[in-house]
Amino acid sequence: MKKVLHISKYYYPFRGGTEQIAQDCVNSLAGKFEQKVICFNDSADDKTDIVDGVEIIRCGVFSTVSSQGLSISMGKRIKELIASFCPDIIIFHYPNPFVARYLLRNIPLSTKLVIYWHLDIVKQKILKNFFVCQNKKLIERANVIIATSPNYVDGSSWLKKAKEKCVVVPNCINVERLQSTPEVEEMAAKIRSMNEGKIICLAVGRHTEYKGFKYLIKAAHLLDDRFQFYITGKGEETDNLKAEAGTDKKIHFLGLVDDVELKGYLTAMDIFCFPSITKNEAFGLALAEGMYYGKPAVTFTIPGSGVNYVNLNDITGIEVPNRDVKMYANALQRLGEDSELRKSMGEAGKKRVEENFLDTQFKANLLKVIN
Image (tube, rainbow, N blue to C red):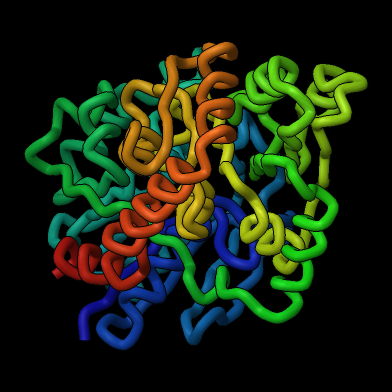
């Protein structure tokens, strides 16, 4: 049986988009390959544990720079693991620039390198310049580069130079996690009862700048009280968003919610709002999850992002010019006033997710890349 070593920033139970995809990769290859995972720990201590029958080597982090972990033990552990485990294939989840140097230094020529390119380094304007040479070496060494959408390949200054190595493997949603229960249906009925005669608009995600919640709130101010906006999550922008909302009673901040409450709002909503504004939103897994519930989505145009690959304009939802608050409000108004349009776009969105973004397709696509 061939061996696969996964290198991720963090890993389950740590929650994040990259970490979820890393776990999806491991689960998709289960039973067909012998696997190990090496990643950072969320404390200063080294730790090894087992998740889904796979050994997870977690290296302690003593500090972070621009969201990148710094670990004294990582370099040594990667070297030892490659020498002892002798992986036939390494799946490296990018960006992880400080770990990339250890990978490039220790990977044998005979080992197949698959780079899972989640996104370009965009936000760190200065830091990204230090890794130009490293990126060139990574791409040159890679046997295959996985991108999450054709849009991202075309829009990435790095990937469009290496199209011959790029393969698109769209992200997948966890259908089992999204299944309804009596508790969820009860929650959804309660939400609908509280909003009788209203249009329920839901937005889900961490409160950070690129998620664009500020623009959603500005759009909400332009609409009448028939529209009710529910925003989950929290983050560094929460206080600013609440200040932006002011006394507008249409806007409700839910904070962090459990699975039952989240699924209740996803079931009860009429429109899914996904107002991300930059390529930091490389795909939009939460967008695909929202569409799975059979409701239309409203998104901004983000050149080079997979968001506009997931949500198709005038088919599964409505796409409007980036940061155009008035057009976003107009899209919500159009959907709010046309229940048949909401139904047709919602059904098309659910069908798109079921045909392209489920774990069955993900597993088949990944196996083609690995084999």
